[in-house]
Amino acid sequence: MNSILLAATVSNGVALFKPLYWAFGKCMEFLLSVLGNQYFLAIVIFTFVTRLLLLPLNIKQQKTMAKTTRLQPKIQKIQKKYPDPRDRNKLNEEMQALYAREGHNPMQMGCGPMLFQMVFLMGIIGIIYYPISYVIGVSDFVDQSSRILDIILPMYREIIGDPDAKITYLQLNIIEHFDAYKEVLQAEFPKMFTDSVCAQIHDFREGMFLIKGLDMTAVPHWKDGIIVIIPILCLVTSLGSSLISTWIQKKNNPAASQQMGQMAMMMLMMPFFSFYISFKVTAAVGFYWIISNIVAILQQLYIFKVFPPRKTQARNMIENTIERRSREENIKKIK
Image (cartoon, rainbow, N blue to C red; front, side, top):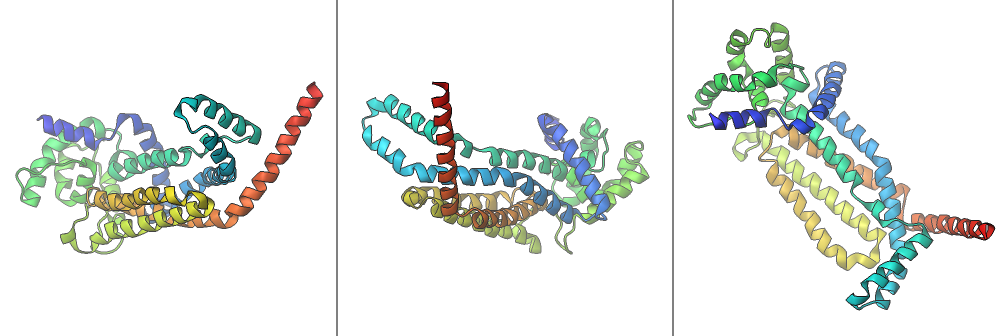
């Protein structure tokens, strides 16, 4: 019984993120109604809009990186001045004084865009794994999930021929095998699984097929035919995004190309990790990653073209000079 309760808990999501699931679910519900239940187009729009919102943060990050690159000779000069670890405090003081003079905050390169992406991913997970609760809007499902699981688990084990099979993502499992569960669920939970709700689940299920044989509720496997294209495309697009990111960083800071070698190896490991994970999650998650990687590639190329490193560094130098002179004039006036 403990394993069943644990599965039910996993199937209902993390309590901390439930407001986010609800908000994203409402957005997805609206998009599906506008797009005629085109689930995949809705995911593409979700991803594009999020990346668009993220664009100002990425541009700011690019400018900060260009400013840091311009200051590298001065930073290296200070570092050579204090090679002894015992002079760490003096080193830090001069570094802070340099940043103050230049009006530069290296912490602005931080992880704002990454945190934003993680928040978005949590919301996406909510609408992918828990669509009955947050997209279709069956609010009582979470409260009854343990009972529902008790009823359909034996049926699921019979369907797949495995007496020890477990259900991790209950709502996706119901959508995947809804035709087999429908009569029992309607009989046991008539107020929850009304004809209207069942029709919505059926329509949602139909929208989860990109093409024939490509079921986004299923977890990819090498033996399942065409669905294996999802992990492969995850790998290819993720590699493309990592390679372009590495190339742009080298262009931004040629002096750090040796250090970039180690970072590049780590960045290239991530695509293979996502390739592995894409065989552990539903194809819908992999599809989101593919679209996200494609949009990220386009965004990186756009930023690089509009804000090329040399021009950005030159613009930063002019802006910093004007700002520094303005500060000096203000100090003179005060004195």
